[in-house]
Length: 577
Image (cartoon, rainbow, N blue to C red):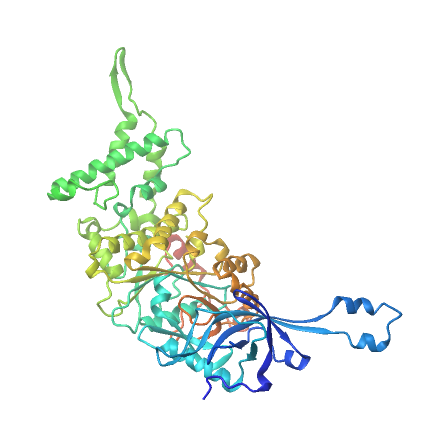
């Protein structure tokens, strides 16, 4: 029995032109042309190849009247019958997406994205509808579902009965991007993926949550950066990031203004003072092996107050000269640096960095922090949600980058046999991963940390999933490493242009549907999906806290007392709850 058994009613036409991944089909009459719809699947029967079909997507449907016949309309010498007999050329353009058929070596019907041969001129083309579409989609779903690494995303729009699966391995191995305008269903999509990952025994995903959208999910463990009113408390939920976690570049970007004339001296003196204090810590603890190998970037606790005192002494130093007391070499050069340091230390918004409890400055404190971030062995530890909503916006990029860098470096230095893969879900990525060019030093440091993960993370089991409503604002270096794209509705032209650059050239035409897709529909392209398709994404059982407010509906309700006094007090305390 034939795999696909078409009758004459399904025939679209014959191949008239082939160009690698593009095919033009000559359609004989208008009735056949009506069968073609943009986005539909077409099967091309390869001549000389038994039970092998090329599957393609309709890109464009054209009804073209020959130019010379149009000119004849204006020729008075032509009769009415000549005008009525104008030849009309019906043409359908296709994009080849894969090969479908019987594989003798495997003894079964399969679909593969590879195309070993292109169609020949006059090969027959058939629209996949009804029973034939069901046959193909059932094989597609079965192939996607095969194995324990399948990730159910939703259902195909072209056949609502067929479930759409991603290859979970390829989705995370080669980075991914989930993109879409506000209200298009990005949070749904992320929550749907998290929900399935949470069922795996040792999954390990870390969500960078900037607005607290995912903190209500029951299967997650919540971590959050403490606010100004919590600096004297410790709990498993609070995530302190003491200043000694910062590397040299991150510290310099926070404290040193590169535009100042004495910036190079500030950098040198600050680094020397930090190294001296780190050496002092290691000597006191008797860590001789670390002392012989550590660098300025090594995360070793040190006393920042003593660093400030050293800089202050150098800034005020007076020395003996040949004619009496004179100003020292660095006299007055560190005044602005000291002012910035003291300003940061006194600002409680940065308390999670500079006013952490004493226990957070122990030599083993970083190991405890990393356990919070990367542990997957205890209850609800597979999915960690880090709430960054309390972090001041001016240092948000460097703090998010700091967490990502620590995770990556710990993964890098973990023994290969004990290393477990993990994924970083970067929600609202455009806020801290913008284009690097022209950005301030704080943003630059964060972008560089993520760029390194994007380029090298796969080797060490660290994956990125970039989630953004403004892909045009996200670093192209990072997005270009995302080999899987789930694009929901996008209406902005610049954003669609950015997404088009992530797509294979032969599939760019699929992007035309992005502005007209419904909420929760996504165009899925990449290594993880068998067929580039428009998919209706499964609604998660537990929905994240949506940031979308139904204005008109809310305005129709009776209002409660907003208690503005309490809001003002929260503003003063820098605390929402």
